[in-house]
Amino acid sequence: MSTDESRAVSRPSYAQRAEGAPRARRLALAEVAVGLPAAAWGMRRRSVGWAAVGAVLTVHGVLELSYETVFPRD
Image (cartoon, rainbow, N blue to C red; front, side):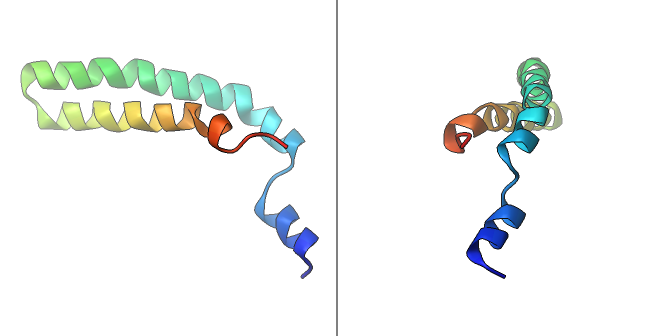
C-alpha cells in the first residue's frame, strides 16, 4: 500500500467531513446545552451520578466543538 493510499483510507476527504459537520455541530451544542444543567442539578442535589453525566456530556460536547480547530479542513 502506498503512502497516498494509506492517507486516503485513514482520513476522510473534505467533502465527506463537510457533509456531517453541521449535524455534528448541532449535536455538540445539544450535548453542552443538556450537560450544563444536568451537572448543575447534580451539584445542587449532591448527586454524583447526575454531576458525572453532566460533566461527561459537557466535556464531550466542547471537545466536538473544538475538533475543527484541532483538525482544520484541508
